[in-house]
View 1 (tube, rainbow, N blue to C red):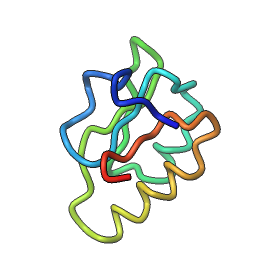
View 2 (tube, rainbow, N blue to C red):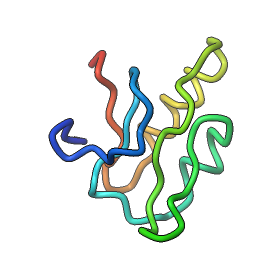
View 3 (spheres, rainbow, N blue to C red):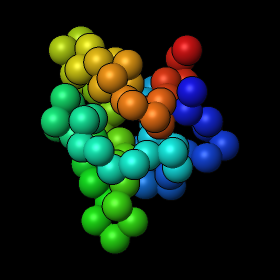
Length: 77
């Protein structure tokens, strides 16, 4: 489970976040490209845009559920 205390500073404020367990597997960026992007220097993903539609929120939930290291968190859970 992702830890809010270890979230990356690049995450925009909102429901979803990525913490320092990210292994840069690209799953979230492929699943929800409108919301996740890569920090190239550090080699990890972060939330650059919170979902603004039900469709984007569903894709972010799918990314969170599919994350192999549970690095994606949801402040509402």
